[in-house]
Image (cartoon, rainbow, N blue to C red; front, top):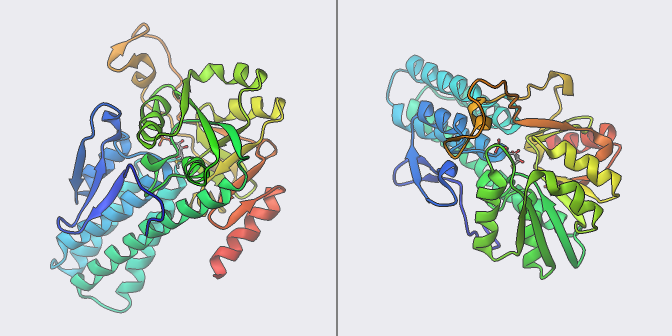
Length: 358
Ligand code: MRU
């Protein structure tokens, strides 16, 4: 399944335990804690607390734990089995409102259960089907990571300094990442890549996770504070930007980690290509950008850094987890189907329709 070395793995299905396993990303880069569970409530907590994070990883993990849980409760009455599965899906859907992959994966699981129920009432057969569907969603993500990497690498010059924000890497997906898959595969193809990683306040996914992954892989990188981006662009130190996405609407609005929009604006001003790498499971063709909920998180994440209070406890805080980048700031969107170019309100629907008919 993997055609390049995989130095880090965020989530996987352990077939001897019949459990979802994950690396607790809140402990990285200093501790590599692996946790396993088949309890949807425990995994919902892991997603909410960001032990598991990154849109594709969230979706795949939710599907895998539903499969694991189904195996655990197989043998109960059909009514109890379906009620418990529906409740598990309901709990998982409530964890993070912005990441579209969560809705994509859990809707697939619901559909799979409905279809299987029309053929059988044996809960062991239903559980097996749910695991199969979850593993398909997992493999689809691995495959998408690879294709995004291959297509994206074509856009990278032979020598380039690439800026990325947050962590859209192995620690956010099932395999190579999205933005980091582009960087990885360009690197494996022998291109001379240097990476600039923003630290990504408040939870420091860039400083903790992107640095951890790229150092492990030996890809040269420099860490910057989030507010250094404009100066580095002005100094000509960045050739292109590649970031991931939590949700892309059918007209090309990109919802991604808070700070992405400011990077896109600065890139536009300095005529630097701004690429978004994401699987089509991140594309929401149903909702307009005004209907998308931007997650707001606990103010404590801003007031405390690594457990230390850095301001006054009583201060008001805005802690939006994501922002919105307008389509006209996005040079192109790198998906597993290929490169999608503007005008996105035409090209995105065409590509999604193509996906649905193949
Ligand atoms: O809050 P997080 O860490 O889950 O946010 C992650 C991002 O914003 C990523 O860029 C996005 O999910 C894409 S990951 C391939």
